Image (cartoon, rainbow, N blue to C red):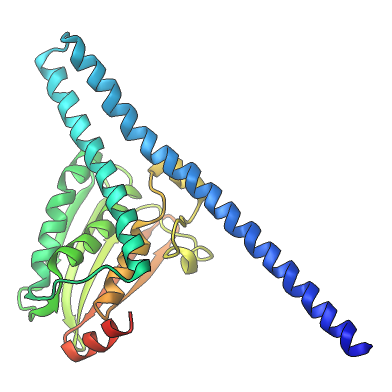
Length: 262
């Protein structure tokens, strides 16, 4: 009888825990849907609004060019969001494959910096690089590595105020290539740091409205770097900024064993 009571108590505790887990999953899902609705609606509103004004044919040449620029920027924002969600889905299913080539990591960094240059200029954030000139080549997917670095830089710009600074650094250290993206932005609270790489998570839900994003970028970065046999760490202090560091192994054998485990 005592054993039965203990068993029932454990069963009840498990059921209660499952209920709490399901409620938390439901909360995260609802929050994600709210966030993604906002992220889709904002650029779509810009595109539709400017499109209607252009159709009236009453814009000045300067206004017309501004409309084209805003539509292009909003379209790219939508495309990046959709691509990130699709890539995460592929990774979850194990269907995302890497195109491995001998590459110079600095090439991926330079492309990612260039892709973020307009965003940085628009926000008046200085985007600088400090790249080692003697990096050995590694086996990696140039496009996917560029994608990961792009998200880190874009994230840094997003959470850095006007007149702020974002610096991308590369170096070889202890048989690894280190890529770091540092900013002097708002920083991340220490209690939130363990969760920032979780899908659809942001340090504070209110930042979604203020800065944009649905919390998929950092998750995608972590997954892509892990597929390369690397890892990502973050150091941050509220009000002083953050540094995200990627480490990629020089040894192909290290990478190969990690990749097979995906």
